[in-house]
Amino acid sequence: MPTRLIIAFLVIAAPTPTQPPEFEVASVRENTLDDRIVTVNVGPGGRFTVRGYTLVLLIQRAYGVMDWNVTGGPDWIRSARFDITATANIEGNLTEAQLQPMLGALLAKRFKLALHRSTSEMSGYALEVAKNGPKLAPAAAPNKGQEGFRYNATGLAFQAITLHDFARYVGGKLGIIAQDETGLQGLYDFNVTWRVLPDPSAEDPREAMRTAVMSAIQDQLGLKFFQKKVSVPILVIDHAQKASAAEN
Image 1 (cartoon, helix red, strand yellow):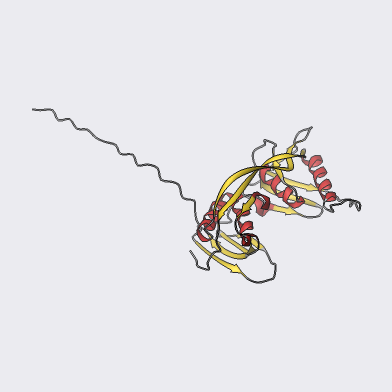
Image 2: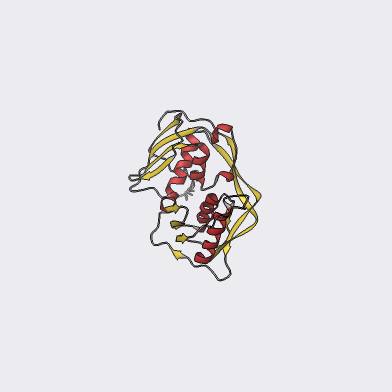
């Protein structure tokens, strides 16, 4: 009896690119009211709403950057304002890690946003560990991020954020380019207070605030802002168009 040779071929499908998660439903409408009201809310039931946001502000939230990280695109991305109401299939409030890819996918779909990443050397500040070491409190609870952020004339408080975001937020409030170079990972809680002593002779009125905040951060957190050239990540907008009023 002849021997039969049976050859089996294992077909391995090529992996398909992972699609970013999306909101279940999202409404995007241009806000034509001249009331200068700008609000954002990450509410229960996976709900995300903004009012009066420009496309650049939306990009900042989606990609975790500041205004100076975004370049290119038409003029209206910094002037036209939009209202968004979106809901995700997630219990409770969205974390930043959940929100960012969803918002990025929404901007690509509704604003036809296309961009690429680059870097640029700029004059700014690096956040580094001070001489006597850090005085940091690990986060007591996870998943706070921007929702656990408070900053006013006498102090700041953060809950469960990285030092990357800490440097970025504080730099934005002080009107400087700031970037984390501590090398420290993880999430931390911050609570810093200060007293501003105005300097009438200063050319920039914000200088007194910068001095007070940086001194307080060094004394209370063991972190120091050093002025230097920093390599800044840049998002270059290749294409964007105004979103229609249609819903997902």
